[in-house]
Length: 302
Ligand SMILES: *Cc1c(COP(=O)(O)O)cnc(C)c1O
Image (cartoon, rainbow, N blue to C red; front, side):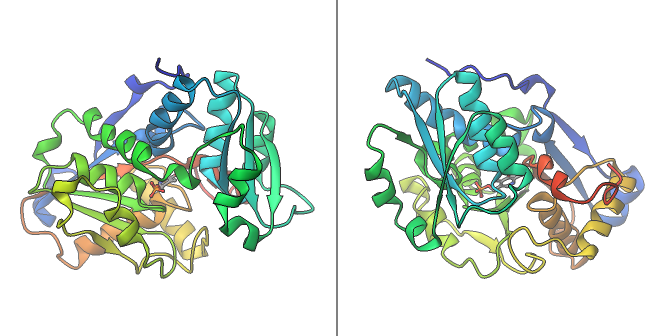
C-alpha cells in the first residue's frame, strides 16, 4: 500500500535559466528541476527519500515511527508532517540538550505532533542503543539515509521528461542519500556532481558508495567540499546576498542550508570553465525553502 501524502507531483517543472544570449556566451544550458514546489514542508528530496521508508512502515503495520536529527533538520519536520498525515504517532530523537527556545524547525515538527526526545551528543552517536530502548518504534535512519531513501531519490529523474539528454546532474549533498539515488538512476555517461554542505565530511564518499548498485561500485563519486560557507547551516552575509541576486536574476528561490550553496558552486564551476562546450546541465532544486524562515524578516527578498 502506498502511503498517501498531500504532495502535488504535477506541480514539479523544469526551469530553463539561460537566455539565448547566455547560452551562446557560456556554451551550455542550465535546467533546474523544481522539486521545491510540490509541498511547502515535504518538499523535494525529503518526499522522495521518505516514501519507500513509509511504505515499509505501513506494510509492517507500524504503530509508531521514529527518526533522528538536529535542531535544524528538514528531515525531522518532513517526517513529522508525513506521519501527521498518515495518523501514525511520531518520535524525533534530537541531538543535544533541550534548548531554552525551540528552533523554527522543531516548533513546526512539534506542531505536527512530534514527540521530542533530547539526547546528549555522545548518546546520539550510538543510535543502535537508542533504538533498542524503543523496540516498538519503526525507525527511519537519520536523514532518510539507506537503501530505501536512495531508491526513492532515484525516482526524481523519472520526473524529468528528457533526463537522458543532460550531460551533468548537480545536487546538494547532506547524507549523500539523494546523490546515491541519482547515481543509480543516471546513465553511465552522465556525470553526477555533489556539493557537500558540510565542512570536511570526508566519510561521504564511502557512505554514498554503500548505497550504489553492485554494478556501479567502481563508479567515480564526484564530490566537491569547498562550498560549505563555514559549515553546516552556516549562512554568512555573502551567501544571503548571493541568494537575493539569484532571485532577482532568475526568479529562483534557494535555501540557506543546501541549494544556495550548491547553486553557488555550480556558477563557480561554470566560471572556471569546468564544463565542456555544449554541456547540458541539470541542477536539482531539492526543496528545503522552509529553512529560510529561521532568518530575520526581510533578509531575503522572496
Ligand atoms: C536534506 C536535503 C538535502 C540533502 O540530501 P541528502 O540525501 O541527505 O544528501 C539536499 N537538499 C535539500 C533541500 C534538503 O532538504
